[in-house]
Length: 146
Image (tube, rainbow, N blue to C red; front, side, top):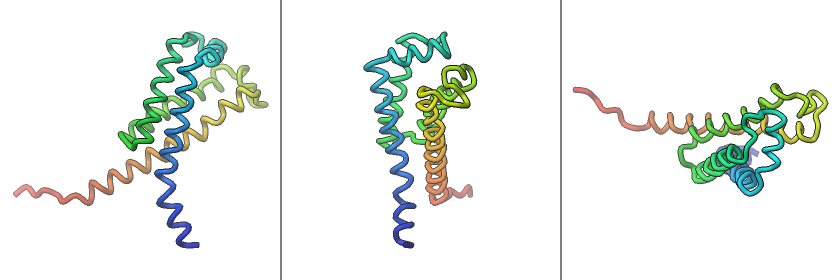
């Protein structure tokens, strides 16, 4: 069992990063291909953003974040960006509870609720990358000022 747990420990970080990247890439591509469902949602919750152009910007950010996470580039910063994107989606619960049906969630509310887990994944990916970065930094030989 100890070997299995050690394997899971080594696999968890990269798997979470890549799966989060895949989800962002997929969602972003859907937003770029068919923005109208998101425009309708925004018109009921954040009407000042209810334009195809804003959904395209969102889609591009999600696609870029997905690609960068999968590639393992700028992970902490991209995870922070994705956290902001998920937090933006979750504001709909506060701004327009009628859309989500809170607390007895509508299908749209159930769909949006997944962003709580995705935000948690982004926080975990960000923390793991920051920890790895600090560990590598601590391993570097320190320059002495003599």
